[in-house]
Image (cartoon, rainbow over all chains, first blue to last red):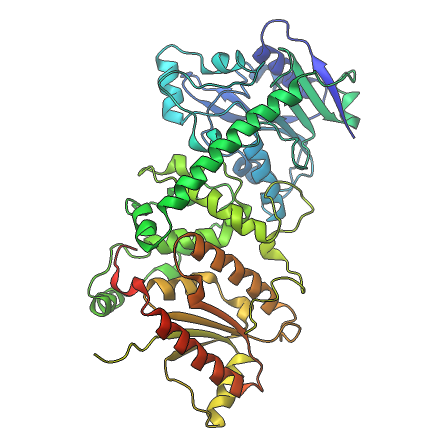
Length: 376
Length: 140
């Protein structure tokens, strides 16, 4: 059973979070910490792997910017098993992607302590940098809004589309596999709620207390607003893409850079099939296609690429939206994948990132399911 | 104008449906010549990428043939194929493509007659549907 404790905030929330995370190293709970820190330039916040507690000066696990889905980084650290105890500070979408990567055997949780912080939303990397350049403190702006959970972006800016419709500001709803440590900020009366695996309470010097009243309501209300935005965007997508012309229009501006695949935390294949000989053709092949169809789009296989990715990984898509952020043509790839994925996963009652025990839909089967398929 | 003749790409498993198709041939059972057969070792080995490819290239239908549930030569390949086909059909439907152009059928090595009937039935259904609109589009 996880235990709840509360950290009083003396100076500001960020400082309290920093002190708590430093404590993980100081108290020997972990030897290394993967934690977001502000870069020297100040206009970005990136993951750092830290061994020396004195190098935790610019820790910021709530900065509203997500340059990479860190599940990919945890995979790099743990694919062969983490050699030393390491703590990884993640957002909920990163945590859920990590659960999927573990099931895909691309990461291991051995020697890993997972620390998830309430997510307040993120801006595109360029927008975050622009806000900082304009003299704003995007983190402080959002931390000022955590009491009532009515999170607003800076005027003239918007959160990433994926964040606007994310129902996971906190990890502990809908039976999501629990992180080892969860730092709650939303609806906690300006304090920090710490929910930990019970054996961690003592080494961390935490005294169990009740969850601050009001948190539940604040979180539920935020999730309700996000879900409404999700449904609005899904409906808009479904009315836009409902025939062949709509589908072609959706991917008309794709430049086939494969950025969406590169940015995707679930697309772990070292050699994506889209970059193998399967998608490479003999010169005469193009001429034959052109002859048969009288005209073909060049380069070929643009729509094929997206359909292939959907078939291969949409069951595990956690909706982090890194694909959409990476798209130079601003195609709403993330919305397409989330909307399509929702119905595909419903077939198997599968929710990516929910549980380590639930088997990946493509890795298992049941004899008594889908029995109408294959029959006359 | 000549009647529309659908083109069907068929992915058939080596152990059951391909052998069933072979039996249809050696038994001189008549069926429409609209089907182009590709032999696989197992329906479970079919990556949906190839079904998608056939549809986007303008094939009017894709037939996937495997062993009856419980009869897979590799124990469970057909069950896995069934999941992949369910996912593929859901994706096609949601993107405005016609999932009914993809047929999955369990046809055993002894069911030459059933193979011939399936192809006949599929050709008739596709004639009803008309040509795959992808054939004359080039934006993909």
